Amino acid sequence: RSAAAALRMRVLRERVAALSDQTRRLTRNMSWLMLQEMAVRALGIATAIYLARVLTPTQYGQLGLALALVAILSKLVEAGTGSRATRLTAIDAGSVRETYAQITGMRLTVAGLLMALLVGAAPLLGSTFYFPPLLIMLCAFLLVRPALAVFWAFRGLEKMHVNAAAVIGERLVAFVGLILLVDSGEQALLWIPVVEAAAALLMVIWLRRQLSQLYPRLRVGMRLSEWPAIARESLPLSLAAVLGAVYLHGAVLLLGWAANPEGAADFLIAQKLMLTLAVLWQVMSRSVFPSASRLLVTDTPAALALVADLLRYYLAAIIGLALLLGLFAEQVLALLFGANYAGAAPVLQLLLAALPCLAISHSLLTLLRARPLPRAVLAGRICSAAVLLSVAAFTVSEHGAIGAAWAVLCGEVSAMLLLGYLAARAFGALPWNSRCNAVVIAGAAAALTFLLASGIAQIAAILFALFTYGGLLLLLGGISRQELRQLPVLAAFLLHQRHTAGRWRQ
Image 1: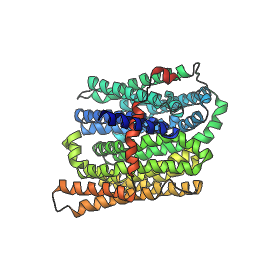
Image 2 (image 1 turned 90 degrees about the vertical axis):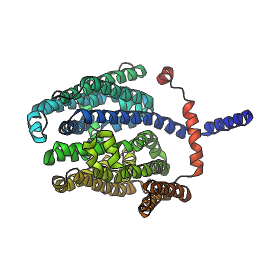
Image 3 (image 1 turned 180 degrees about the horizontal axis):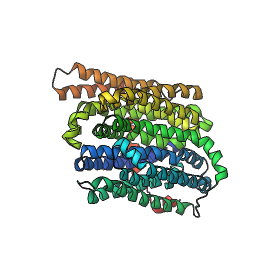
Image 4 (image 1 turned 60 degrees about the vertical axis):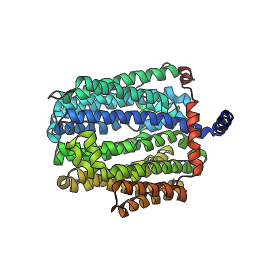
């Protein structure tokens, strides 16, 4: 047995050594981003559970509305410079000092203007969305985070572990602070943005220190003469990011305005679970962005194939899980957030149906940003936001949170179709192949199997559906046996990585 174990270890080491540099890089990046996003989502869910039980549904909806407004404005602070800075850093690591000087002053200027705007408009916003004006004033300080954070540098350098440590630390400090300082009462709502802003400031300071160790003498510059050149590339991306934030949070704001904060709370709870399932694709798209930026310079078909493979892996992992969560939506919501939110089950089911479209749209956006084609990115965002707001305008007032969920689904489908057309024109092909079709067919067959087996016990019907899904994935080539055998090889590679402080500096 010992000889056989030694042989297996030797074979595993040989397979690890045979991994390509791109596979190693993507695996390492995705592992750190996955750790980051899973930890953040876990802490986010824990925070949401705590706040949903401490605050009333009205207070929870008011908090969500204020944070939604700030999240939209945060994209204006970033001004589309994040993607540009990441791309420049990935192509030339020596450009970090210059890039930092160019964009940080620009971001700080925009943040200061928007903070002043929020403070001045607080009474009007409070009366429109039914939250205390002081709440939005305190939330305005959260705009410091996007102004000073240097996530772009470590993404471009492919040092994802630094960003992971920063973001996880921020969320952990915020979570502990909320537990210690926020309880039921009238002032509980106002403590939340104070705690969040303090945690964000600590994270920003630590992250900049890490970058200063790699690039000493970082300076903030007010280079007004350079801002127009930056804006020519970044402004379309900035508008696209703002529209993306409007798409993500617009339904919440419409619910708060046309319905009530309680309806916004139902939608926010369901949306939080849906976005948790989107974490894996968020990790994949961020990890592949530097590699896609380089490949699109020399080998466009290879870039499309790379993104298609990652999209296929995500769909294979998520479709089965989304089906299970949709079936037990009411029980899951009641268990996590309390009986007050069990009625949001139909909202969650509709949002889960939008997940595959969201993943496809974001795979196309990743390629369009990496080219870069900012106008195409902006067109996709305009389409999704316009469809969502148009549908929601007719459905939210009558159907509340369910109408908002239908609007999200329509927006995702329309954005996917438009971005597919624009990407096909730009690249001559799409990041999609027959193996991606196999995953979709397997998911549809699993859902049909469950419906046909609904006459028997529910557990048996679920097992039949999962068996159908897994069997068709292998039979049709959605996932190959070779790819499954590669998983322990990738795991072994990750276990052999040593991320010491000295290696970070290197």
